[in-house]
Image 1 (cartoon, rainbow, N blue to C red):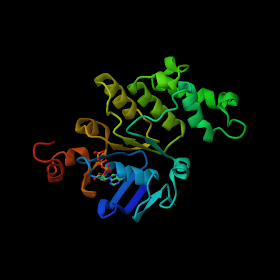
Image 2 (image 1 turned 180 degrees about the vertical axis):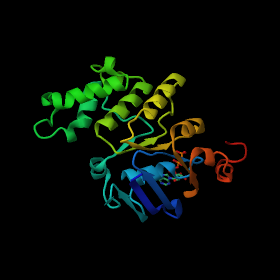
Image 3 (image 1 turned 180 degrees about the horizontal axis):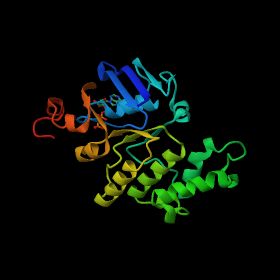
Image 4 (image 1 turned 30 degrees about the vertical axis):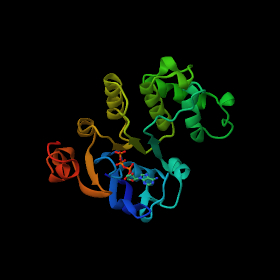
Length: 246
Ligand SMILES: Nc1ncnc2c1ncn2[C@@H]1O[C@H](COP(=O)(O)OP(=O)(O)OP(=O)(O)O)[C@@H](O)[C@H]1O
């Protein structure tokens, strides 16, 4: 598989505390990759470094053949890095459809920059995405009226509207009911392989069922990386989480 993301020697410090410590991470095109580790292991910080919300103190990041180490989130989004946050970030007063349409605007071309004026170019794919994510019946509602689970789905629709090649998912199942979690798992499983996924998730059952590669972090360091079947029996797992975890 072609390499999509290559992070080499990434480090991030807060004062004297090193929270990401010389991490190497490679993600191939279309790969489903999970980052697991105990609280404070540095998972969210690593996602921030890859998405561009934070800059590393050391190391470099190449995405789709471009060195993005010194760029911010917007250029990285244009190159194809999309992000889902721990708390769903939507525009509460805009309709559900408009939220997705606005997210699609950068790809809509000239003359379609304002929601009131956008045409089929933006509306149709936005409506198709809502349909795919099971939100079509809510298209006209203000996004602020959606449940937490529906906002999560909407945020994924918005991220997909940006045509990502890599989707960063930070604890997407947090706070979801069992049925919303099941729907989310189905959504992630059905994402086309044109989209790679980097998933931070505490629920190891979800991680094992959704991903091809699992990387274990503790104290900002990579303890192990490999297919789920290997990782679930690796000593590194117990080292990271303590005895009894599998
Ligand atoms: N802005 C900050 N200033 C100082 N320390 C921070 C800051 N953000 C995070 N940290 C510290 O960095 C470490 C790693 O945090 P991070 O949120 O990346 O871990 P995590 O693995 O995502 O944890 P969790 O599973 O609890 O979300 C923690 O010790 C945290 O307290």
